[in-house]
Length: 277
Image (cartoon, rainbow, N blue to C red; front, side, top):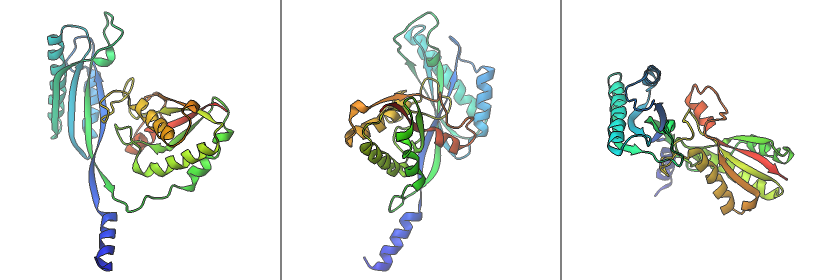
């Protein structure tokens, strides 16, 4: 390969946009045995349809809790998913897949009122986003190094928000541009081995108790994000006795209300809570 051709390929790789799917999840909740759209859910869908810019497709899943028999819940799940799919299709031309394989969610605590969280419909939104292949990772801004330098000064019970460590939508993996920051944090914690801490995972959007992780296929997204950082630290030499991890779902957003995609980006993060020195 001659020099001119090599330079051409390098420039091309740095500039060609690639397409990737970045899913978000919106949830609609229902009363016992309800499958028709409530006024509240209808309003939520109207707002959602107006925001479908750059959306590729939707996947809709109906859920039922443990109340009723298996066949009844199958029908209930199907009706919930079908009605939502039909409503969206009547408002916008979009590929919509509805899954009504009855998902009768189990729960340890059973009572006559059922489980409100599992009486719902999940709308998974797949957006087309543009990313770029970069030959070499960008160096992290010096502000992050300065920021974590104050970790040793934070008193026990205080925390540090790390919006420089953000995660891919609906996944527990870091955004590629944040990986260098994680290495800097690792190096600092190795040098200050007196610091004990809790890793707290967060998600964007109002997703109830927690969000769905499309990689592990469970509803522990914020927990999985915190554990991802925990496992990385253990693998790279941080004593597991120094740290714990916890998921806080969307209970403590960095940005509220979330008006833009960037607001959601900042809320998909971790924080460090200082637990001892």
